[in-house]
Length: 158
Ligand code: ADP
Image (cartoon, rainbow, N blue to C red; front, side, top):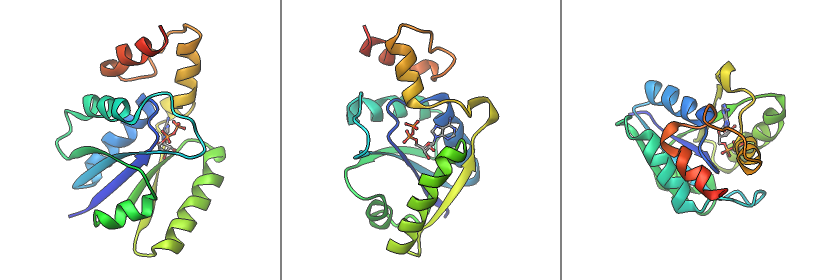
């Protein structure tokens, strides 16, 4: 069985994330979307809120599960006996950091592979930060996030 982990902050989940989740779920037997704390970023949404939003948007996909982990991604993969980490790539700016992370993870555990999926052209500009910036300034985010989580995000900024 091919099992993969798709890790991220998902603060909050966007249509770009969901696109990767759906595409990964088609080529993997099982995908765990895992919310991980990123020490470089201060989160706007709590872990429970981010998990709840991911559960709402992934409900239709029976081989997708949502989880969270406070610690090293490679430990999480190892504990769950998962050998594939999925990452989305938007632009060259993502590449440098993701390249470094993939190589470090390879060093920590050579049995775990990182697979990169190219963003859908439609979402190449999309990030959680841009969603938050627009929502914070009262802009329309309805085309950027899945409809199931729109209200939850908007409520945060009222
Ligand atoms: P961000 O805060 O930048 O949106 P996350 O940590 O939540 O990033 O992202 C989790 C994963 O999803 C990362 O592998 C990231 O590269 C990927 N990702 C984020 N947005 C997109 C997008 N629009 N298209 C493809 N992949 C994406």
